[in-house]
Length: 344
Image (cartoon, helix red, strand yellow):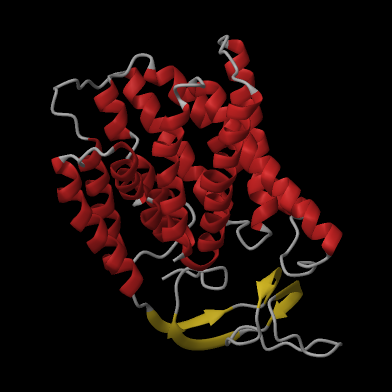
């Protein structure tokens, strides 16, 4: 449900941002959206620190996490947008729109081939259905199609975003507010510099604040939920559910702009619905072995993996600290979460 809600919030950003495009150019808008998400989450962290209300509930980002976080920022926040910007100049719009749908497939391929994330046959079918639905939503019948070096650049950008998703998965146990705040500030700063370089006009404070507030909701909160979903589902399944974002955007566009969805929407909707239902109903159970593990993340003491004791009175609520898991062999229904990233 966190992945689906993340998709709804992100999908809503397109029609809402369109309302602002009459007063702000695309490059400054991208900068405001990302900076808004980073700044608002940074302020949230400040309020939490001052109040102490969430102290100890999430694992902090440590020095050993920085290579993963830095790699995600470079791949998804720096390299991918730059490559995409140059590729779009020489790529037909219809080609680019279709190729951008490859991100879900790229995330899945990298998760399975590089990070050895387990994928069942139903999960593979769900990937195929959601990817096909995304292609239908962006299919252009005008014939404006072409494969070129620019098209390969678009594919490279989607691959980098897929890599970003997988690298973020490896630190998803850590505080998502910190992760997304850093990523938002980094990506927003890059977009700001690019806007300056191409001579974009920046709007007044009112429009800027509106764009930043939109970024805090549709980018900041959305990606926080996305990171939390990565903990429990892994990169491939979370990416598939997040791939349903265009449906939310089209439905909101209907409410705002009073325009009927295209025919492709009615073809894509059942495919996305079926793909999502497959993942929500997926069950995966077998006897598996856990090696000894020491790590830190938010957890409860109501499962088969956190039976350690505390020196102080046992905490019934969500909390985080460095803890050890002993070796264990058991069987139960599970997903490739932070405790079940074993091979098959």
